[in-house]
Every structure is written in structure tokens, then in C-alpha cells.
Length: 338
Image (cartoon, rainbow, N blue to C red):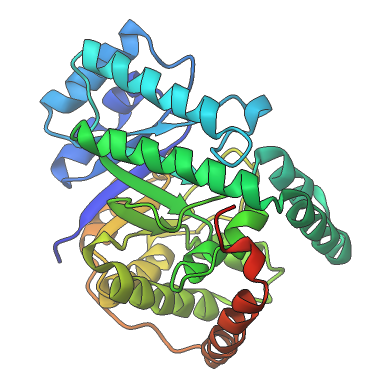
């Protein structure tokens, strides 16, 4: 089945991708979203990106900041993040390695995520989530950051570069409607910006593992199908999805899939929902497996298949969709620009 496929890559530099993955990416017509850090703008990386381009492999820049600056873009670092992206694009133009896409990864500040992840007691973990959300709520700062990201998005598109935003799973649910409260609580303004692709990070392995198994595999795969269906209805061909995990990332020790069959269920669910832009985290995770080709073959052989229905998730989503919109209207102060 035809769909656009790319792999997130957070750890391997462009020369490593050329050495370890280029033949597979070529053979299976897959692209790669390459993490680009402030230190990534080197001649060695430029030469490797030229080889990737000459091989006919699409690549995206995935700009990331220093961890001390929050790592991911958000409300408090939108200006410095925009400067980083513009500098990377200028460097790419000078070196003739302009990316096909720039991926804007909207997640909570990394320090907050670490605080939540390190808490082992569920009540303490929930308390840290609440504390972070309360600290993050700032209507004026939210809209200022949203305006800056909107301008950055337009600049990139005017330069002929597609934009993709990856959003947290609950933000993907919020983006089905018009609310922005959760985005303010997580400092991830995404709604109302004309991204070319909206890609919720519906990582089944993490949803199951980090919920203490309160969310089953069946639950998580139904969520993929349900949310992708709703976003497809709203955004049409702009609706995408990010799936995984095949390997750990910056948070360390994230739950990962044991084999490709586990990934394919969610992929086929997204395809059944009409999504045709798929990003898989991560390329390095697959390359570290005993038989990387097996993963590529399984992914490219996926067919649109509606997953087994989870009554628990379906009923919960019905309830949330009834309660959240009127609640958002009641808390109207966060929705209007200052």
C-alpha cells in the first residue's frame, strides 16, 4: 500500500546514516528526519547530506536545542528556537543541502519530562504533572509563542520547505476540536498554524509501558485508529502519525517493541483511518536489531486494517469529547488572544 514513510533519527549523524542505513532507505523508498543540533552544522555533515540527496532519499531537518534550553521548542524558548531553525536553513542553502521538510517537535520542556519520568510512585508522578501544568499556564506567553511559531512556519513554506509538527498524544486529541488549554499546560502551541503535516506521537509501546499497563496494546492501537480517523476528517491529507518505539531516545529507558509485528498493528490502523504520512521512531532502533531488513519489509508490506475495538478507550473518548468542549468554553480566558 502506498504511503509516505520516514524514520525519526535522534542519535546518528548524517555520515552514520549514509554508512549504516542508506541502502535500506533507498531500497524501501523511505525518508529520514535527522536530528540537527547547534553543533551539527559541519562540513562533514554537509557532505553526508549531499550523498543522501544524491541517492534520492528525502530527508527532514529535525532541529533540537541544547538540553539546558529545553531541547524541544515551546513557549519559553520560541525566539531562540526560531533563530536556530533559521540559522540551520541558511547553512543548508549555502551548502546546497536544503531539506525537503523541517520537523517541529512540540513536547514539554525536557526538564519537566525528566521530573515526571523519574517519579516511580503514581501519585507523585501525577503531582509532578499537575505542578508542571500549573506553572506552564500563561495565556499571554502562549499566544506570543504561537505567533512566533506561526511566522516561522510561513517562512519555511515560503522557502519551499514543507513543515511537519509532531505533537503529544493528548494534544492530538485536543486538536480534533478547537481547544488549546492542554497545549498551554504543556507549552506546545500547535493549533491554528498551517503545518503541512500534523503528526501525533501515538507511540503504542510508551502508552502501554508508561501507564503501568493500565492501557493495553489493544487500547493503544484503537486510540491510533480513532484519533487518526478524527484528524483525517479535520485536516484531510495533512493528517499524519508518528509510531513506535523501536528504540529508546533522549528520555532513556522508554518501552520499545519486541518485534516488527507489534508496530505493524498500529501502522495498519493508521492506514485504515486514511493517514498516508507515517513517521517511525527510530531508525537507529531498527538498525540495532538482529535483522533490520525484517522491520523494513514488515512496514512496507502493511495493509489498511481496522484494529480490534477497545470498548474502554472508545467509551472514554466519547465521554471526553462530550465534557471537554463545554469545559473549554467555560474556561474561556485561555482561548482568546490577549
